[in-house]
Length: 260
Image (tube, rainbow, N blue to C red):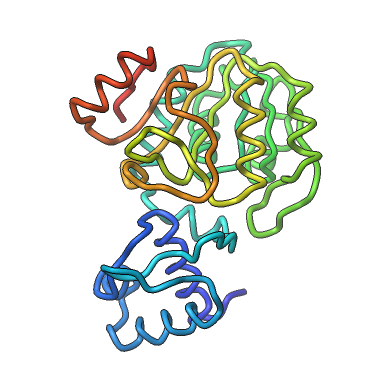
């Protein structure tokens, strides 16, 4: 278990993974502590090389691959993730084979599928998420389940790494549901962790249709590692109201937009 101090500092890193540059005042308000307390936290994180001070506030240190625990990530923007998941379920058809990568939005998608047991019973599920596998009772609630093994990442409740990504190459599913840490103004999807990025890159060639699920807080942001351009996806599901530039890009790239 994390101490209250450790949990708050992990939360700061989680916030910075979604809002790459944040001010001291913003972080104090988001973590419900004083400016003095947040400054001490930031000094400690900077001393550990996890963050750097930049114009306008602080940011994750370049190349920082410190992972934010799944339990903390799932608390971020829960209403948006639930809305996105409900829209995602509408794309799933009976007898589909679907890939659910380990991410908090897919956990919400899995919970939505539990509300349609007749549909779920016809599906073949491919996942690297222990949370999703457990939710489906190890495959008993769907037609069949394939778990992609490899290195077990205990903080993310998932299997990751090169072996996991290689296993994915053996599959070709109906639909792959993916997310990402950030979507840049140039419409490049990026991530913070190499293992996640390798898995997602392999997923792009493992599905007939690829669905990107991403909440509005991740737009206009950039992480460390490039995954692919937005044009690689068949669908974008988001709670964000798109600008004219974003709408035009999606139309030209033949990416279907589903508002959540």
